[in-house]
Length: 139
Image 1: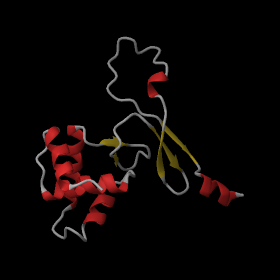
Image 2: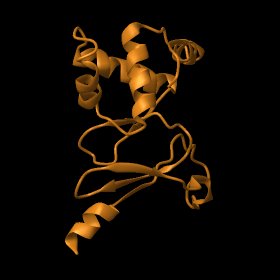
Image 3: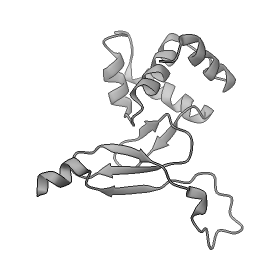
C-alpha cells in the first residue's frame, strides 16, 4: 500500500493539488488495480467518507485523467472505467460476467499503414469474449 506522502507527491508532480478526497480516490485505484466506474469508486469510499459526493469522484477522476495519473477505458461503450496502469497494455472483457482484465501486448508492433502523416495520441487494444470461468459454465 502506498503512503499518503507518496500519493501526495505523485499528484504534486502532475500539478494536482492533493486533498483528502483526491488522496483517497488515488489510494483506492492503486489498491483495487481493476477498472472501476465513477459509481463503483463512490460506493467503495462512501462508508469511509460520508460527505463524499459522486460529483467529487467524477471531477477527481477527470482531473486525474487530464493530469496523466489514470486513463480512461471505454471497452463496454456504456460506462467509462478508470485504469491506474499507464503503461501500454490490452484489455479483455468477459461478455458474460463483465470482468475486465489487463494483458501484455506490444502495441507499437501493430502496423499503422495509412496513418503515416497522422499524429497518434492514444492506442488501445480491446478484446471481448468469455473468461475461463464463464466458458467452463457453458460446458
